[in-house]
Length: 202
Length: 202
DNA sequence: AATTAAAGTTTCTTCTGTAAACATGAGCCT
DNA sequence: AGGCTCATGTTTACAGAAGAAACTTTAATT
Image 1 (cartoon, rainbow over the protein chains, first blue to last red):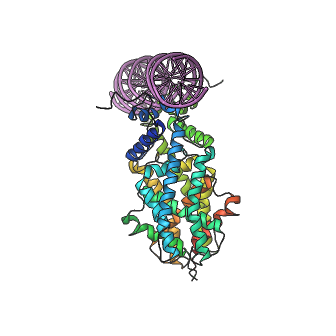
Image 2: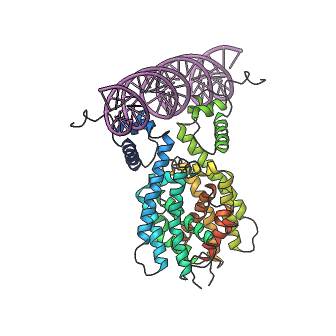
Image 3: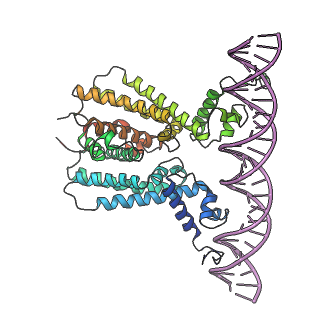
């Protein structure tokens, strides 16, 4: 009760506080159906105060998504920067990092790729997403360089890799990669399929 | 003005009419932010009438998603059932059918995989989705049988294939598979990567 | 010390979802 | 035919939300 009343009129960093509250609600509920008023209430501020920092509810959601992309990028960059016996192992570890991130933050991950995180109307969000996508791209380039990966159009390889990893992440958080459905080590197995190919080429 | 007033009290098939209106709005706006009242208004019916057919707004959305899965299944089944020189070509055509469906119905496709189409609380939706997923699964089984595809755990292969196709569809409708970004024939290229593998095995 | 502008609050309007009570009419039973 | 009944409509009511506008507080600048 010590700070119930003697809170100063000005919050100090309400923008950040609102973001933190919203991220917490997103993590708790695993959805972003919360209202802006509820966020304001939990932050202990009037329902109109958020509008001083965010044009509307959707702008807050896009900021949450942007933060999500930054964090995802950090996770993948960290996983990628360790020592590996092969580029292949490095690829798997980086992919696993993305999928783990989705598993730990399903709500946030869904938001990042939902239509509420429209990258065409928010340059900052767009850039954050692009920066994150650039991380695995470097891995592919290095892999082609050192002979680990086939030398085909890097763009196609990147699209395929990203589609695969993102697709697995989405399947994972929809509960469709459970052991009983898909065997043990489902992600490893699926990544092996991508790495070795579907066809019998040999 | 001929039928403005002399509409009968009972609609006849309001449930279907509401679904049609909602599908049309989804197709026009490419999002499902429409309100239930607006759907009712456009269907020419009072704002409470929909509740006689749908428990709440989310239930209508799940029904739209269910219809989406049925239609997607039809598209893939049709593409798959044609004559092909190889199982590989059949696989590509089926994948393309899914991605084309997403391109033609981006709003609906997004809804189908959004958290508003929660398969864990709607058995009918869950079943429709499973029926659709089963279609490419048969293709993989046949491909393993006839020696076109590697004989690895079918579940892992299915997960990888589905992840790849769904991932590409999502990238496509996010405008991230444009020629200038990803080269010509981006989908074909990405699918080739999956089919042949990322690694230099040969 | 006075002024200003950013960051809060209060108040108000318009909308939504949803519940409850009421109205209509199509189909069935006699 | 006459009347019941129930699914399917409508009307009315209400709580809560978005967002605009006008007002208040306080930190910072001059």
